[in-house]
Image (cartoon, chains in turn purple, yellow):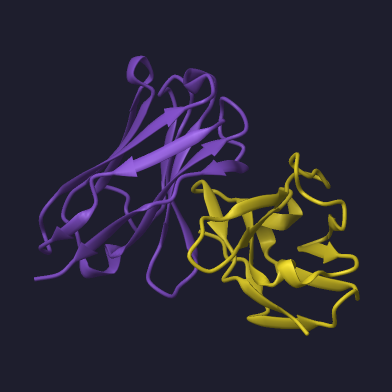
Length: 121
Length: 106
């Protein structure tokens, strides 16, 4: 059974940093691209970032480019999102999502339950 | 980055057919995928590619595309289909979601 478990969310002040993690199990992690998708309270889904199976390719939404960095550790079956210079508008539930291929197709076939990030003073 | 436009809300009578649409320039080049999200739950992929259903998704869900418009059709809507539906597509930066459509089953 595919499982994606996010962690690392919490309350953080504007301008500070936070690192999210996603622990994957139930599939061959290094065969698939992975993504972060977020959802602000009461709002729709927003793709944040994606990474290919071997970290050779990464992509970011314009709203986070230059502030967020996606990475993965295939030996640990883990995906990460380093978030710097956080803003109030980054407040959201952050989902880890599995792609259905090794290079991004942006078909997200499994999702975690999310970790909540709140940016507030 | 590109945008995808969805109707905010659609309703359908129980057992009838409903079409949810998604418009955007990126859909001229890429197929959409569709996600169902129920309150308090993570999204679930229901349609991807030309018209592919992941295992476990009922065959009453189908997808189609023409020009800059992608459609999700539910043939014989059930009470459990009441949810928010989001389309998604590749774009120049990576990926973009539509604003979502709230489906009410009457």
